[in-house]
Amino acid sequence: MAFVARDVEDGLTTQSKAWGVGIDEGGRSPYIDKNGLATLYGSDAYVVLGDHQPEQAVPGKPLTFSNYKIGHLTGGQTFDFAHRPTCGYYRRSVNQGVPDANLYNGTPETGCGTPGRGTTVNESEPDDSRSTADDITSDAPPVTVSGALATTTDRDYFKFTPASGITATISCAIPTPTTRTPISSMRLEARSPGR
Picture 1: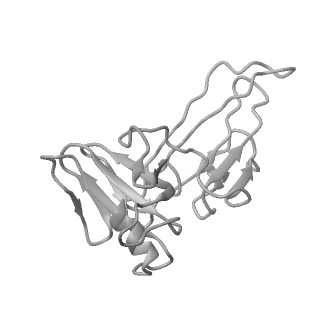
Picture 2: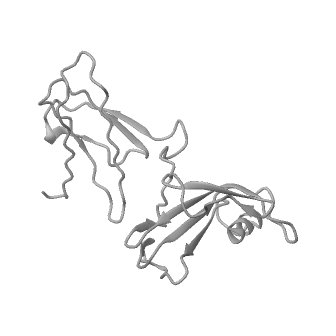
Picture 3: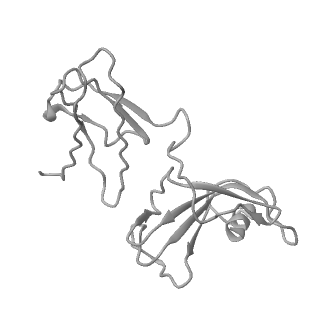
């Protein structure tokens, strides 16, 4: 973490952000292709992001750096350095040279961005019409979509076509029915372009 903090402190980065990758002892480093997509071929690795100035990162004094971000990768996982994710990290700190306990796991943040940013899309397609699905591909992340399921057979469609190498995380929530017809099931369909 000290290397990341010093890079930010000394202005050696663009946009005041520094990245580091930590590999478990005996592990193998990730392979990063020409498009910036890293694939981990080995045991655990950690991507560390310092995206703000440390409180103290000067020679001869213990490091103090609050709330830097750590992403945990396991074998076979990918990380897109060209389009870095805005969530999925957990936060840790170093105070007067003493790191937080348990640096190697945490609960990832799922807020995905700054409040007030992102896009909310409400269903506008006619019920059960896949051909007129709302296209959310170009909406600014994070994207929140919502629809109104009026009956147990109603379906709402949204279209999303990710670029090559992009990972999408989909979380679904079905509110508890009140006066509406209860929802008996939910199906998420993912289709490749051309199918």
